[in-house]
Length: 620
Image 1: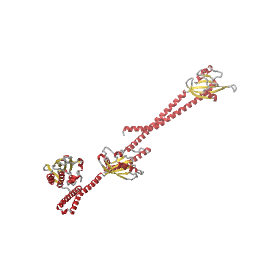
Image 2: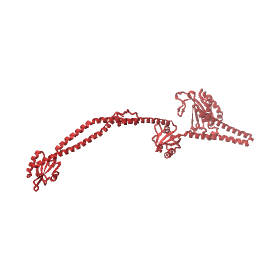
Image 3: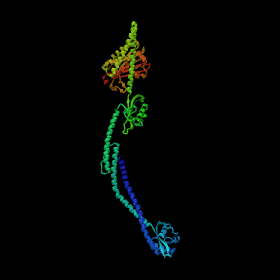
Image 4: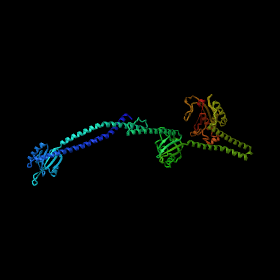
């Protein structure tokens, strides 16, 4: 928080603390002013009324009874000048007999004046109002006067009117005194109140900063108790609460760190969702399974926007509506970005103290490889059974034929024995190839790697397939630089060359050509990048075996190295293949740390590239 914001907040707090005092002071001043003003006015009016009544009684004794009109007006004016008040004499019927300020003949009947009515009724009357004749605010005081005995008595009212300016002047002085006292009292009490308010605002501002820092999770400022009062106890409690909260937050961070480390290290994808299906937590594996880039996140999204797999949605519906503690398992499939993962999804409600779970854990175990292995195993068993059944059926059939009748015909017996021998040889090759692949996969076939010349191995492999090539009318052409070396097991390297050349000769039509070449090469490319740094020099060799056969369609290329995989099932068996040659080549090359690459185009033949290390430095 900036200093300007702190100052502004402290000033605002100070104003709020002083506001009740200022409001109370203003309320007291207004109350005192209103009360004093009314009391002063009533007091002055009462005092003036008594004086004016006595003056009216005195004037009644001085005014004759037998005068009226101008004569009475003159007498009233003379007396009014002496006492400083307006004098009016009113007959019993309300007629004005004399007046000091206006000709009595011009004045209207006064029988409706309140003070006159009260005086005739009760002996005296009083009223304060603005006079219509002189246009001033006056205090009217009327006194009933009686003359004569009971039989000849006469009655009149002597009324005096005194200006209220003296009352107004007194009220003004009282008002000034009241406001002066209020201001003096306010100034006298403001300084202590200001000091107290500033101290309280400063302490409350520190408490606010401290609480805000604790809430934000940052180190709070220093806080100490200044007094043993309510705020001091609050400061002590806040300190204790901050220490406890800090310890709990630290424990929560440690637990969260452990949880994140565990989730990040899990090979299973983990999602935590609420009842509405919104994702509350997701680990990195789940982000990868549901094809989220590092910039994207699953948290906050609805599960149906992440995967619309019906089995997954049904699993979520069942677990959110099912019994607490019940665990459900489903197998779902994902097809994100062209992939086809098979996942085993386990849904479990998270326990709640109330017994009604609000969050649910979904754990996704990738069983794609297990499915592939199961499929491979089934295919392998089926293929092996099929491959074994054909020669075994042939051997059994021809053996039964020999036993029943062919032994009597030596020529036919020799023919059948030749067929049995060929199928037995096929069984032997199949068994040997299976054992070879098994040894390579299990690592039981230890490689005896040495730096060996490549040319003799190529020549030996060519000699092995030369007879088959000549019988099929296939030409073998060699393109190789002299003095090339590879780092490998001589027997296994020769086995690779024989298998590749045998395949090339086997699938090349009569009059075709098989080209074998070898030369230094750059480090081979793996799926994850180069096998060796590019500055490692020319320490790799590439052996290429190309034929001019019919070629292989592009969609078959990735599966050519699978066991028993054939592009043309009938033609492959007719040519005597076991379907394991390229699988053996792939395992041998991978055991040497090399790379196998196959290129083919329908109608233009197939070319197989084998990258092998030229020396031990290329392997280490």
